[in-house]
Amino acid sequence: MTHPTDPTPGRQTADVIPQLCCHCGGLTRQPVLVGEAYTPSGAGRSIYACPDDAPLFGEQYAGPAA
Image 1 (cartoon, rainbow, N blue to C red):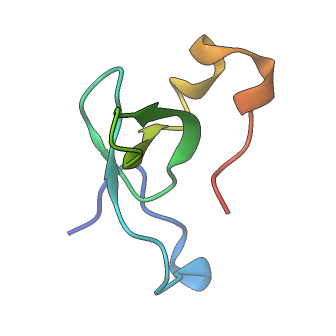
Image 2: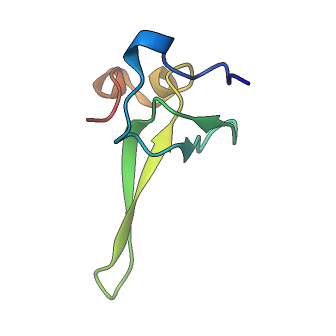
């Protein structure tokens, strides 16, 4: 079974962890880093979007996370 955001069969990568898109809530295997959330204790987390929704966060977030 394939997911719409799965890479093409010849380009599967084992190091990409699927992430939830912060805009549509869909699971993506091509996450785009669009922000970071911080807490007073200093611990933080990355915020990802799918490639289709990433442009909504500005031009600086036009490519997949590395």
